[in-house]
Length: 126
Image 1 (cartoon, rainbow, N blue to C red):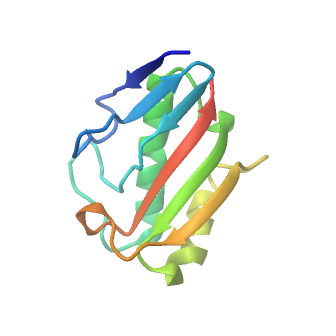
Image 2 (image 1 turned 135 degrees about the horizontal axis):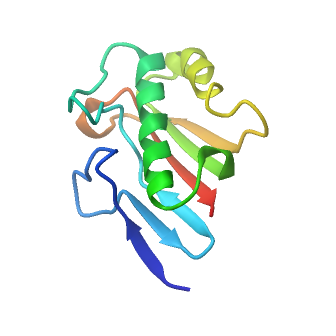
């Protein structure tokens, strides 16, 4: 099996030495996505629901560039800056995974890149 970087201009560019995603045979792994609006370059720093939606849209774009979709996501890992945001994050998250949601881990992180409210990574089937 070979691995191939996934890149798209429809999601924020990597801010370090990593790929937006990796296509590895029948699986796609996204890097952690931040709540950055790719059109404006502005990060959502106030509302966790809006931040979660932006992150998941960015994941959706990376997956599309790899030839897959959100309904093929089998696992996500969510990093929250503040676990008090869990309920509001969940409400936004469930809009993307209405049926057969993926397995998931949610962790409170001491600090996220660019002081983000949330970061999410995903694994999907191609």
